[in-house]
Length: 188
Image 1 (cartoon, rainbow, N blue to C red):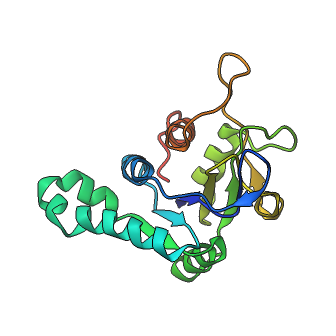
Image 2: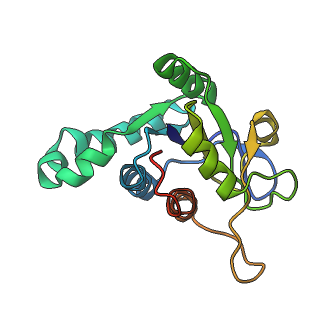
C-alpha cells in the first residue's frame, strides 16, 4: 500500500524560514489523477490553515459531487482518493487506524545526498512488504528538517541532465510514481 502526502507545512521558503504554503488548484487536480493512475491507496493534502483547507474542499467537492462530477467521471474517480488533514501526524494516525499498521515514511527532496533510498529499493519494498508506506512531497523550498529527520527513509532525488533541479511538485510526483511502478508493474 502506498499513500501520497503533499505537505504545505512545515516547509521552507526561499530564505530558509519555516512557512505554510498555499494550496494550488493544479496540484490537487494533477496529483489526484496521478494517484489514481498509479493505484495509490490515497492522496493527502496537509495544511494547517482552515481557509486553505476550506478552499481545497470547495475544489474537491465540485469534482466529487458538483457539476464537475457529472461533467468528468474520470476526474471524479481520482478526486475520491483525496483527503485533507491539518497535520502530518493526523495523516499517519488515520493510515495507522485504517490499516492496523504504522506507515513507513519516505520523504523527498531535491538536495538530499547521503543515506538515500533508491527508487529500485523502494519498488522492492512495496512489492514484498505488506505494511503501508507514505511518500511525503514538500511544497515551497523543501520539507522542514524536523519532518526529514523523523522519516524512516529519504528517497534519492530526481536528477536531470545538468545541475538545474527545480521541478514543480506535481512533476516530481509523476516521475517518482513512474520510477517506482514502471519496471515491475508493482501494485502500490
